Length: 259
Image (cartoon, rainbow, N blue to C red; front, side):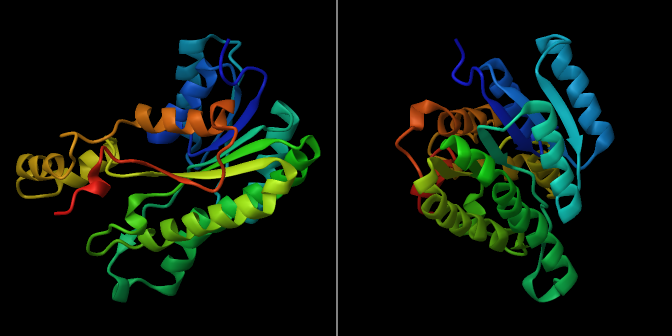
């Protein structure tokens, strides 16, 4: 038996990276999953590949939506309810990775980042809340980041948005708890993704930069997307039934090491 047998989940940003790893692990653990992403082509390709892995009848579907648009968020939730029923699990993972110097960021860039990285997390939870509350159960997992409190130059407003996700998680946990809904967050550190590899590739000496990154982690490596997905599975499943309002760090010990 899988840890998520008989449950439906909505995972945003599910076509690549951490989101895709979460979708695939949830499927392997018995869940029916709606994956939501901005890129229709990438979403359909990911869906085809997952059906190739899990079988044509695998309970996985794709919804294309711009989470910066309220109407598209509402459409994604309607499609999820129509095709999957009431989700027992919501994973807010999709995010805009926009990063710029604080003084150079425009009001429009700040607003667009907060719309996707914070407002969409709240609004998706708000829309699903009454359905979960009627069942008196549910698990919401918000993907934050160690960037909220351990940042580097020109990371604004991404780092600010991730700090807001931590506060949002606390508010939801307190307000939704009486209805049996748990809300937690995961803060990945520097994770092995294409995005991180591309970022390191922009340095004059990428190999040296990789060495510096690895030395900053007590385990001598950075987390994989699969390790973040296993953290999401823990928080989504009954294994964490008594846990709500917490932040789970997945950073191979970097937060504990002063440099």
